Image (cartoon, rainbow, N blue to C red):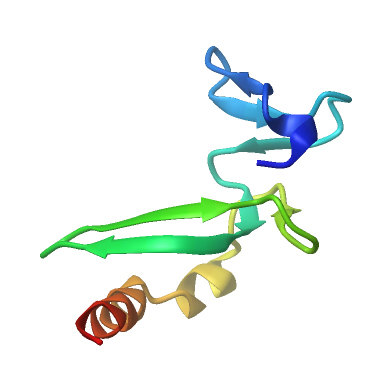
Length: 87
């Protein structure tokens, strides 16, 4: 987490907020993160990531549009993760 968001979790609102209040990351936001580790089970992918680096963090506060949602294929992500786990 970036330094200005390390203490910014708001459990009541279920979001992360920067110290200055300008950035809020909540369910439905689109973020860019660095994946540090992935674990793949039969029907689940668990990942650990970081937002603490240049060019990472909040990209978009609105949920995906229908076009963006159609372009995202979770099955493809699962296939890629499984192939990475096998190698």
